[in-house]
Length: 342
Image (cartoon, rainbow, N blue to C red; front, side, top):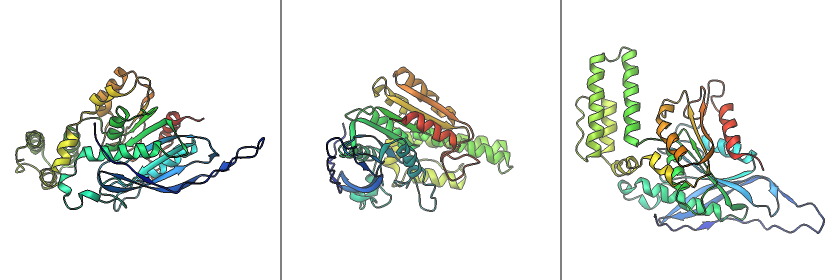
């Protein structure tokens, strides 16, 4: 069990009771900044509260970002798809309150307590931070602590899966959007093999060179897991640089993330938990086939639906060709099915 220290600072609205016989006052939708502490780091987030009747407790979802420097809105430096902010808007339309936050290394939060020793930041620290956020969401005056959900995108979906089987109270629903559904280094190898194959199709490498590169990629993964130096001689420069970084300051994070096999985590979910798992047919980062084992594990865990939903023409950021800047209609439909309506 991970330990953490969670505290929250928010401005709370004063709700006055309606006169007897009068219709309950409607509280308009609003966003507010939420500040909490996890492992000594001040973490900043946005709580979105949909319009609701005064005094009414709302269903609520914690929204978790994907890998890399992805902030509470789903953005990275130089890339502003607003994926998570848009997802929060979709859930808000179904009267679901949401909390999304700047994880370590992003937004207002930054590296926090890890500022002077970033090489010690590992994946469990992100899980603890998400757990603290879940408890903050649980304790908000507008949220129903018995109607909480966790939604994650990409790597955040793996974190959502881990939380779904361990937090209290257990969530009523877990949404895994384009999830990291296999071990990290297996996913990296799969992506690199696909890129190498594409380079062959474009005439950049010969098939013989492809075989050498593919073998070097697999050897690099084996070396990393055995904590041995990676040989980069047969790797293209960009790939060699990637594996070198995996042995550097990010080595602890990579090792601890790779230790998680998501299908094993599915067994801890409470039977009947509503689970949505999406995969996009145009997602080159998380191909649908990578979710097969997790889908089977969820079935064995006897969770509820909607289950796995294949999104035709949808990419990793939940877009399709006709909707390059907003969630595709198939994504909206899947989210509405997951969240439902009161």
